[in-house]
Amino acid sequence: MRKFARGMTAAMIAALPLVTVPASATAAGTAATATTLSGRLAAVKTAKQINYYPSAAGWSRMWTDFDADTINADLAKAAALGADSVRAIVFPSVFGYPTPKAEYTAKLAQFVSLAAAHDMTVKLTLFDWWDGYTDITGSTTWANAILAPYRYDTRVIAIGLQNELEPTNAAAIAWAKKLVPVVRAAAPEIPVTISVNEASDLAKLKAAVPVDYYDYHFYGNSEAALAEIRLAQAAVAPAPLVIGEAGASTVTNTEGEQAAYLARVFEAAKVAGIRAVAPWTLNDFATGAIPSSGVAQSAAQYKFGLYRTDGTAKPAAGVVQAAWAGTAYPSSLLDLGFENASGQSPWSPYLPELGVATKTTAVARSGKWSVTMKNTGKTSAGSPSYRVAPIVPVQAGQKWHAEVWARGNAATGATQIALSWFDVNNKWLGGASSASLPAGTTGWTKLSVDQAAPAGAASLQIHLKSGANTGTVWFDDVALTVS
Image 1 (spheres, helix red, strand yellow):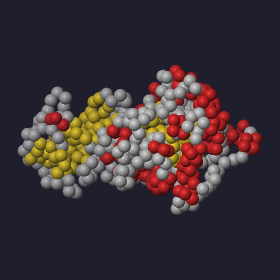
Image 2 (tube, one colour):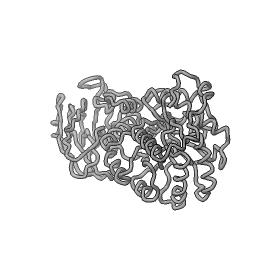
Image 3 (tube, helix red, strand yellow):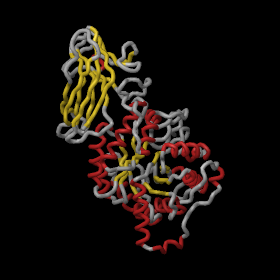
Image 4 (cartoon, helix red, strand yellow):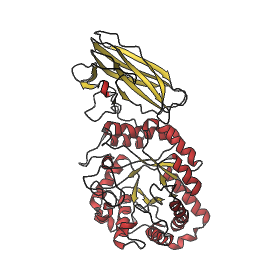
């Protein structure tokens, strides 16, 4: 790969030629090609890849409103997080079909050069917003034209035939069976993949369309990420699997939960032996940045970014940087002392209609903050609580210990710390609770609970609960350990 000097402007980079190997190099032979493909596939399996669109130009607008300076600045930001690869998604409806327009192939070439300037490879995803599955001739013409400049270009690490292809669509599968060989012939040294969302879809895809590796988009329950990832691995074994997208929206989650979500996915992937996890996406989208044409997007889609629209980092950016660097996550990630700012905590209420935990500075064992509950109810559904899930993935045989310091003022009912276990389908399997805080008015008292993960457990929640309490309790300084 040619190394470009950092600090070059987008215009300077655009003026540089593509780095390609002459057509005569095809005489290298099958053995050499296989070795090169194998090396590229090894790089795919360890890539620190970011999914990318500019904040103000989502989906097709990245290309219709192409802004090289913004892209250059964004890629510098991604590289600073530790990214060494970036995904670019290409639209036949925008680029021109079946013959791509020179204007758009030039923009793609510039994007590849911009990425290379930051020592980042590019994954090309073709045929987005596409349902023309009966047009094999046109699809072949278009794919060949898009890929021709990159036939032996080492800056392109992988090619995705289509994003989230539907394996139950017979026309789509028939099309993919014919187009995968086309793409392989157009770029014989670049691994080819197709992405899907569900483990069951991976099994169907593998049975129908063999590719070089499989791309799993994870938006499931992060608390059970290890169990879900292992199902996906089993569906495609022995073929390689990467997580090509993973993320949580801060429309439907706090920024603290988004950070914890990604940390759980990274940790589960590591335990499963998967080293490539690509966050979706670098930036939040500005209002109106996602075009109304193509696939309709929900409001939640606007807030999956590691960075807000003003360019400031969310806690998730620190998680991704730590995961890619192999260093410890920020100590505040689980907010075990309740000191995080508003919106930065992964804790959430359970049965809030029976009582809601609130933060307070009136009483604290350490730091400035604690969590308080008062005048709570209790029903057959249980007691209200404040809950969080650990970052460490649940595995058989683990022994978990959880503790919290609690105090009460005229407390009644039951105030405890509890463990709750769930299977991969989020079915409750049972749990264990600590002894209750003594009734009445008490000083800080440590409550603790120990339990081994039961058979079938895929996830764990820690609950600070207080039910049928006509008084007030406070919680502070949670601790979790696993052995």
